[in-house]
Amino acid sequence: MSATPAFAVTPRIGYNRAIAAMDNAVDGSVLTGLVAVLVAGASGTRVDRVVIVNLEPVGVNTAATPQVYRFYVQTGADYRMVLELTGGAIAQRTTSAAGYQQTVYLSPALVLPAGYTLYAGITKRAAASDNTDFIAFGADL
Image (cartoon, rainbow, N blue to C red):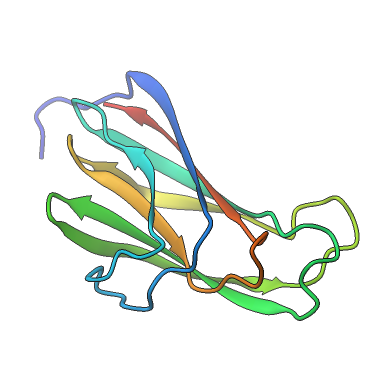
């Protein structure tokens, strides 16, 4: 434990869009479909929450598709899964609202050392237009 506390210095937001389904290897050995969401700053970065937004266009997906979201931390050459969430089924949209949205509060916060990267992926993609955004909120230390 540190003798002095590490306070947040600069707010950080990282984001990316998953446009391909990832491989089902949960050990991070296959990186197909993973997207980099947030790269840690020079002194490390704290991630407090992640927002997941499915952007299925209106009228595209005719069958509800259950979705699993996975988050990995790249620790140099290795990728380690830190979180797996089962999302609601993505049903056909009839309004302009997002198909699915979830905010995940990380408690305790995920602290990424300098040089580490938070990655995310989806397990299914119903159609070519079925995209999912990942937005990470935190701060550099």
